[in-house]
Amino acid sequence: MTALLVIDVGTTGLRAAMVGDDGRIHQLDHRPFPPTTPFPGLVEFDAAAMSDLVLDAARSVVAASGQAVDAVGITNQRASTIVWDRRTGVPVGPGLGWQDLRTVNECITAGAEHGLTLAPNQSATKIAWLLDSIDAGTAERGGDGGARERDLCFGTVDSWLVWVLSRGERHITDPTNASVTGLMRADGSGWDETVCDVLRIPMSMLPEIVDTAGGTVADAALLDGTPPITALAGDQQASLVGQGCVRVGLTKITFGTGGMLDVCSGHDAPERSCRSEHGTFPIVAWSLEGRRTWAREAIMLAAGSNVDWLVEDLGLFHDSADSAEMATRCETSEGTMYVPALLGLGTPYWDYGARGTLVGMTRGTTAAHVTRA
Image 1: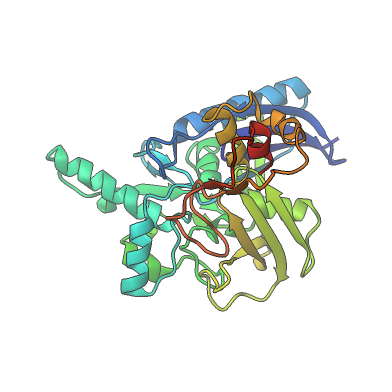
Image 2 (image 1 turned 30 degrees about the horizontal axis):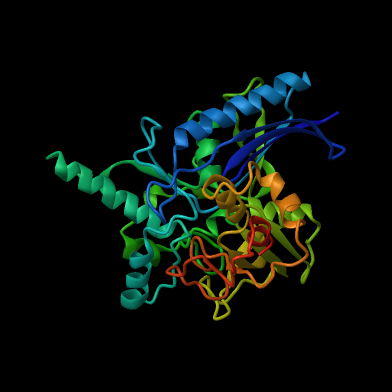
């Protein structure tokens, strides 16, 4: 039986699974890996700790299965941004999560001065911020040389993991991840030099864009047997395919940390890569043999993270799994209403200044009513 190792890195945790050619999961290992929020609107993670945890989980499921790995596939949270030194392979700053909003002002400036429609949950302005942050630190120490003159690499989570697993042999990404960075051309044919010039991002930092699947893109030298890595895909596009939405018009919605609604839109490239007037984005659903299939995506910035907030910060119950039972203690929310804008509002408004709002409460409002709302 063919044994596939699947690595899935989400926003708050990661999984490694051994999957047979029958599509069944035979071994599974889940590890929590929540990001840190040093200040409201800031979302960071330790990229080195992430890759260590991925490697440990992968080795664990492989050992438990007792099988050799025939191929490796990686799916991941998208647009989260890592910059590392090409020579040492060491990250040069914190990883910035896709929910991080520190570059709202930079996005507004890019739009006003250059006509670019960028969002802070894309990678583009996060890269520029990290480079500027490195420069500021160098200046404070009285050092010479700017970050843009150094031999640095940018990558989303897939790119970072391939780099680590291949011992630095491959610096790549796929179009499903590239299309949500804010740096890809509208037709998906490569990186957009204009955006890079505006943000002063060296093209040499960017990974090579390869097909989503269809051949060996790297060898996982850190795993026993050096199995080939044969597929890379952003998590939402992977779930679009996984739920069978491979024809035009087929749609899925996924509720994780955020909520993502994706509609398969076929092979015709969008006229532009930026956000539409309705607040949706064109994304690459997958790329095979150089031919791209597209999708349209609507984004809810906070979905499951609202439940995490009820658990971790308000203490309404002990575990997110308890939320369903809590909500069934009442038939309605009795007029209590909640606007889930803990990280601003995504589609269709894209209001990063919006805040979560809980209204309509009375003296009789209980934790059950709040949870149901």
